[in-house]
Length: 286
Image (cartoon, rainbow, N blue to C red; front, top):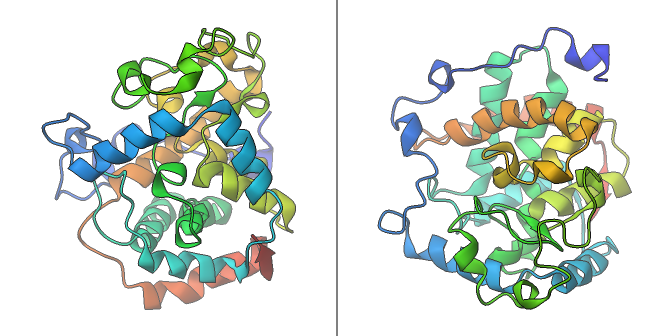
């Protein structure tokens, strides 16, 4: 059950037009049709779907899970994304730090009483600092999917994009359930490696007081085949279904606040630094 202190008064917005910029129509977001998508986006997913295997994910979890790569504050990580443009994103060609503040401000406007949710909007992508420390973008950004079983047909660019992935030739890994069991729960599956899982593990390894709902959003916000298309439901348990509403609510701000109208970050930093000090103080081990 969601705790009363978090769930009380939550109102899931149904119409993105209530708060999205009018610059871009709702249906124009996430247009992955090959004739519309930039070449760099298609290339990023082609490499991702070819190289993100079960063994690759296990190796990267071990490498990054030592948390010995850097020590920075949360705000330093946010501002470091001034130097990153997400190669997998067909909707934004500006630094990821701008997207962080856009998302947070969208949430603050519609959930002014939920500081933890606003902060989640600010930090949800800061695991992308991996790309600034040498991890390729195909192992940092983009939609995530479950490894260890067959990819869902709704994955971006379809199952055909996995034709060069060796796991699809492994009879233990290329079935609907693969190495998993029915309703095992998403916390018990391995996702393709990227910024979602990395930040989740960084937060778990450091001191923070974010609620479980925030950690769940952070861990699965890029899992579009699940929260956008309803894929992989055979692996979900009751907890996943309870949390799905929060992931969907967050997604509306993550997606529809992307706009060429960039935020004035200098004016916003003091407010969000206050939230960081409250929920994730000090320096984090990355």
